Length: 290
Image (cartoon, rainbow, N blue to C red; front, side, top):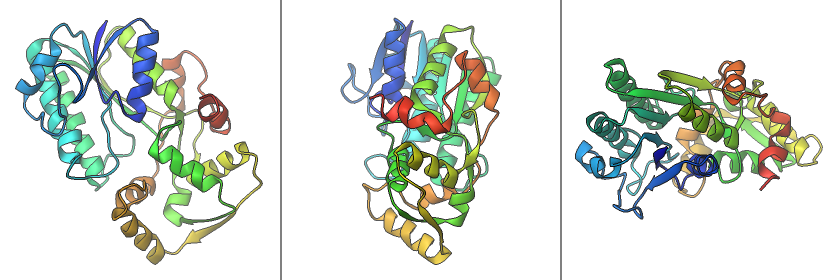
């Protein structure tokens, strides 16, 4: 199968490309370096995408950024460009389209959530109209090397003293390995087309504080001293993070992490065809395997 992969240089996209290539698919990465080149921040019309769809059987969009910036505007990367891409697929007859979104964006006020949700809704509307076979994947926390949030969690897990915002510490998550998410993408493309939204979570839900503690044990450390960060310091740290573009911690991250992020645990098992990696073994299965 000839697959156009958007976001192939990103955290999830790199793993998706590797799994698809291992499965014998021909993967065409859409980027500024591709031929013809494409700039996601500017490709906001269907005509921008049509030249990239010649000979393509399926499209996977794995583009995502955690910060809004003039170079990588979320409104374009998460919303306008994907909507243009989906319209171009409908025009070109490329029916199989997969959008890698995120769990927990429903009702979330952040720009990240609103922009992702807008693109998801557009793909689902085209699918409902019979013009595409669209699938929206909404995973919980995706863990693995190269992920900004993964690096943040591992960094926190190494600290002997840890102060976490109370809403973040007690929010429930279902982390899953990035390679297993990539495997799900490949399997869905190999199977008869599915439609709609698939929410994916690892085999067990736990609080974010428990997840960080689990990572710490996997690193060989004893229990850390964990305190609740006062609200005023939480907001201050997030605002400071807003001004430090290299740090994954910012106001958007705080709002996204401060709510539950869970799904049916059996769906990932069903799509993988085996039991997914539990949170207490994620370091060995992902980080230490590289």
